[in-house]
Length: 145
Image 1 (tube, helix red, strand yellow):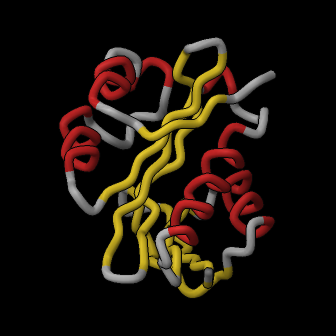
Image 2 (cartoon, rainbow, N blue to C red):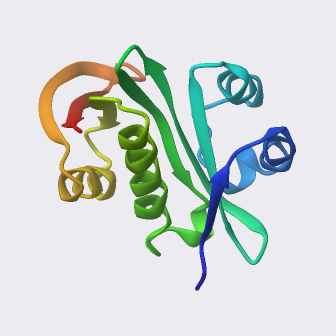
């Protein structure tokens, strides 16, 4: 399976906006995603298989650091290494652009994502209690580049 990763553009956004709630999780609205995509400090990628968008990810640069905003894989394509490829590409871009640290937060119940971040060198640095819907806590992780 060939996974094609490229920088997201507005055409990709419009394609994603049609399937955002049916094929992906519902944590972001289309307006929020478009706002992030249009921000000059943001960098977003899309993953395609057979010319179909199956995932996207992005971060926002803040001085010499970046906060990973999301890594999302289409429900039907999870567990196939797409999230790993997206994150590896974000890390590579950050290193190529002299960023020093990548930060992220992840729901404490998202064990697959936590495992991925551990495997790629992210370290636990803190917790935000009851962050998600005033129930689940957010685990804060960072990677030194």
